[in-house]
Length: 229
Image (cartoon, rainbow, N blue to C red; front, side, top):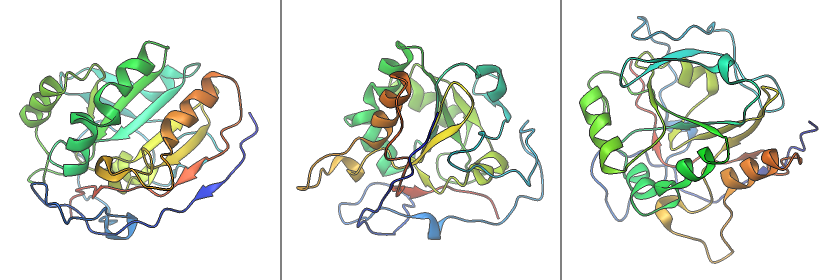
């Protein structure tokens, strides 16, 4: 599939969340995400550290376990459209998106169309949103139908350049990464007067229709991914 790269720059703030929602809090961008490598392995990620995700190229494969201990190998989903959603149930932007925002039923709706949807929590132990029980509670509260994968070491998150929660990635059936960026242009459901753009859903729809993804990159917004030191 021919990928047309069209970067969308959104004029958003750059503050990472650290706790409960605050009305004045602004979105965080990649500059604030911790980029230091983990020194220990805390999960079953199998991709090499030298592999980096890049739009227009093959999506790096990995293996992670979900909250129930089941293993998920990205390569096993080749032939299907796959969405990766970086997840942190303690992040106000994730709370807004899953509570009454686009992510309330977005995963389930797309899964009904045959899309594979994988949420990934790259938060380290002791960080906001970490913990099996914490994540299971969020899954139950939000009636999430898709698996949440555990990436405690942050290896997969760093491999994909995941900077915020949410940070979205779309992979086409050939295994090519065709979109990376924000869920939309409405952080915490605050839609701009210039018009709402559902970047991730647009990319999914294009792939399902066999069309080019015309906006393959956009600025990610939300809380910084809570990587370990």
